[in-house]
Amino acid sequence: MLSQFQIPFTCVLQVDVDEEETITKEESILALPTIKICGETIVGLPDEGTIRDAVVRALMNECFCI
Image (cartoon, rainbow, N blue to C red; front, side, top):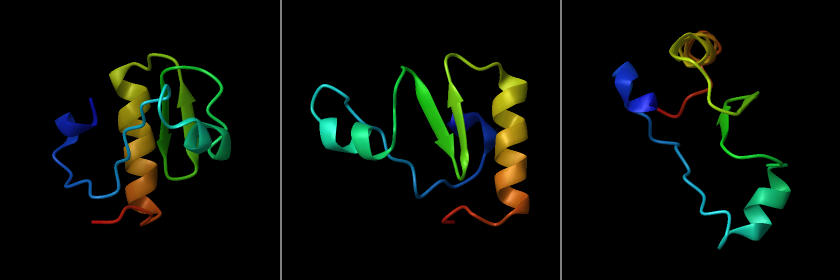
């Protein structure tokens, strides 16, 4: 879904929760799917507007590693 926004994400981490239990505990991932965009956590299946808004806020705060 994030690839639709034409932004060169270089800090995307895809976690296999069955194999990466330590990361899920450190990141407080309590439900699936969980998407973290900078300081914002989105749980569940978000609509496109929710993702777009989070990406825009992240770009405005310059918190992406581009």
